[in-house]
Length: 308
Image 1 (cartoon, rainbow, N blue to C red):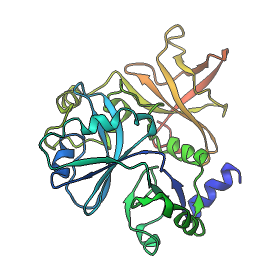
Image 2 (cartoon, rainbow, N blue to C red):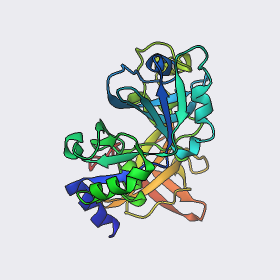
Image 3 (cartoon, helix red, strand yellow):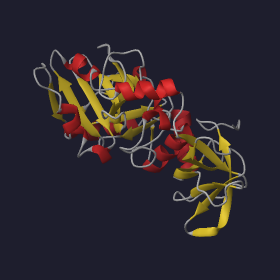
């Protein structure tokens, strides 16, 4: 099935994606909520639910962008597999006298349903509302991997399968940054727009809070994640650097992710643009074709027909 048909199927019926490759950390113990509130940028209340958050360094830069799932006796933190070597140690580092136990859960499966409510799968497994790809959906409770084949068969008999290619298309359309593409350990959350979705500026102290609050009070960062479309529907090289007709000899940004938007029926891209630079007359210059720049226009995030 081609991407267009996959996209149509998920939009009409809902879809399911296996996210078991993500880092999964399970927290138990009476102090788990209090402890995690001292480690992440969002506020946990202890009520069941799923929220996005950041884990930051003392300098306010990202250690990971995460989803935090609060279940009845358990809190699960999951993150991109690219942080598998660093996140567990960072999350466990400050457990000293707390009644908290952290365990890695590679043997557990993590499934997400796009465009599907928990009520639609209540007969199959417990689930909580979750919006991972910019579309309302739900996450299923972690299940043992030996239970996954039967559950997957039951889900995919009702709903479409979200392939990796489609998941990436949905992510880019929604303007959601990803570790290793838009995010790394030199990124400030506000640069990637995570201050709007992942940070509670009224909660208690957490590691990195002072710097993050200072960035908010300053009111700007030196670069911002933006959406781009091409003027003439050309494809965009993911390694492109961004220039302006007013700054032909000066790089003012760079592309981080590209996709062929099924909603807009045209190539789209995410990338960073430096503060104070022109927002028109933009060009993407590929290292593979430096003499063939592609004209760019800014687009709102998430991508819509309305231009910025």
